[in-house]
Amino acid sequence: MSSTHCAQDVPRKRLYSIKELVALIGATEWFWRSQIWDGQLPYVQVGRKQFVDHQDVESFIEKNKYKN
Image (tube, rainbow, N blue to C red):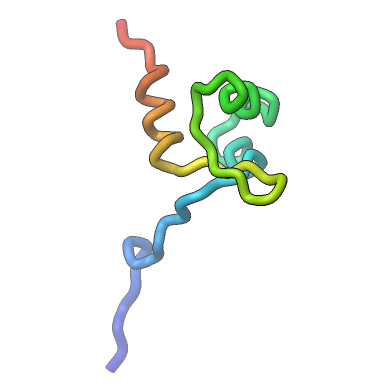
């Protein structure tokens, strides 16, 4: 029996490094770091690295959207 897999079966990555945020969303490393330092974006510290939860990124984007 063969089962077909699709992209929906792939688990979504939960934590993104700063460099991954730059590649996925844009802006610069310093922008993302400044948002963390200013308390605008929660993060997880693992050793010396900072990671951001994808749910917090989505929330950050929604919170900072401008609507006319």
